Length: 424
Image (cartoon, helix red, strand yellow):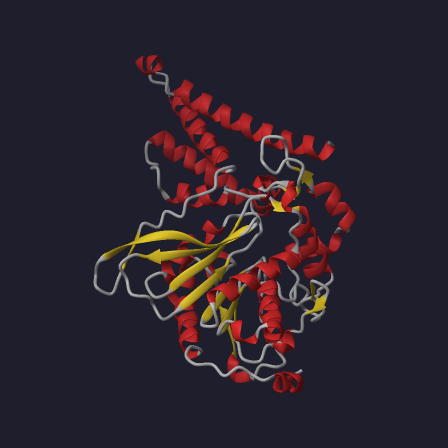
């Protein structure tokens, strides 16, 4: 009950700030005050507009807002978001391009479950749509999932990826962004032993913590400093009565958001101060750079407690992936079993979340894979966001990833069990 009261208190504070913002905007914009112009009222209305919008976005799942894509014929083709596989904790969705012949590249983007919705990768999806058939994992907000649906931890996440890969078939090319990189590697290794014919053709891991201890960051240091008991006491709450998941233990998105903002508090504070100034001067717009970024950044989702805690305990503290000791459904997953899936890692030299060295560690774990099927890329000057959605992704990394996909397309010869045993 204490945890549920904490959750409802956070939602009450958020709701109150949203109401205060709306009230300030209405008061500052009151027509009668226009008779005596007052800069203070303009600033009050501007503060209210920015505040109301910000706190409202925290509980709103963003739309994909991908209307169309230009085809090779020069025409605009409508984009339809189709659910391919529906599961309680997440769906596999496809961006189906109407009236366009199917593209030879079939790509599955594995989105993080780290506090933001899959729409955080909207620009990544948009950049790939002209050249690929694009699918993505769309994880659900834990607050909206009834307790009757059971648990969801890192093993369940891995098995979801296994099912999604099986559904898409063996000509799939997988791109895992950040947090899911180690679990995507584990899912591929699971398939290598369980159903080799269903493995993807290639696996691109972007800025993921395969070995968090390879190059420690503030994120990994935090995981090592606190005990699991401290994490559970300070970070875990029960969903309040307002939502379908009432009573479910979660790591609230609002707590995660406060951590995100706290890492760069001065930068975010200045951004909002500047936006209030622009609104007061009439220089802001509905879809300006600030709103476009923060509408997405502030939209957060809850993670199940067991997923959050098992990620910290098994991936960051126990280093089960880094040590090749990960277990799924009672069975040890051997990453060395991957023998015919090309693996590429991408890192940013300025990444302060998954620093260089953490992701490339995946290649050393793939002991059954020949060097000719391994590749790595370090993008100079790129931070964490830039390597999958920023300028570095658009100008340098995306072409390299598409080339890697093309190099590893076409017919495949599945390795025999004897070959795999020798490789192990």
